[in-house]
Image 1 (tube, rainbow, N blue to C red):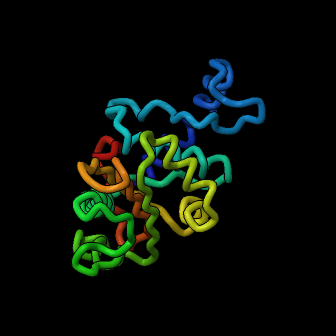
Image 2 (image 1 turned 120 degrees about the vertical axis):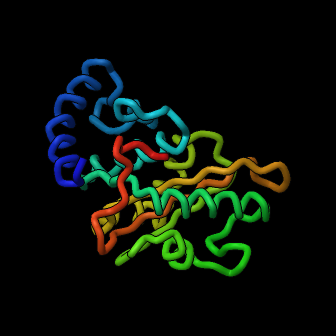
Length: 187
């Protein structure tokens, strides 16, 4: 599905989904997020990384911003960075070989115009990591950045070190329409 068709279809579904959630009691009294993610889009696996995508898009909806589309290249860069952090047992934006987020997403083939990255360590659920990011001004700014169009999320589990989990969310806008999975789901 082309990106513009995806957003048009999503814009038709959001009011109905919000009404259904309100009836089901999934929204707080103020209409905001309760800290639990929406179900994944139809056909998507309910994985922790998909839950992060859903929660980030809920936060963006609450700020009247469009949802971010998953980009496979950003997802690959984010996953590789989470695995690198877990292997190093270090929470950092710098890769083990000195790479930056720009280096990693460029190597993954993402023709970026703007970039951002959130990393987290130790959170056991998607809700926990997104809540921590929203409580941090810099991380919150990345989630709510109006220029970003795409997102990729990574999660790795560590066997040593302080943190059992390492999360990465790579955000961007690109000079192409994005490499959006056909089903819209996070790989």
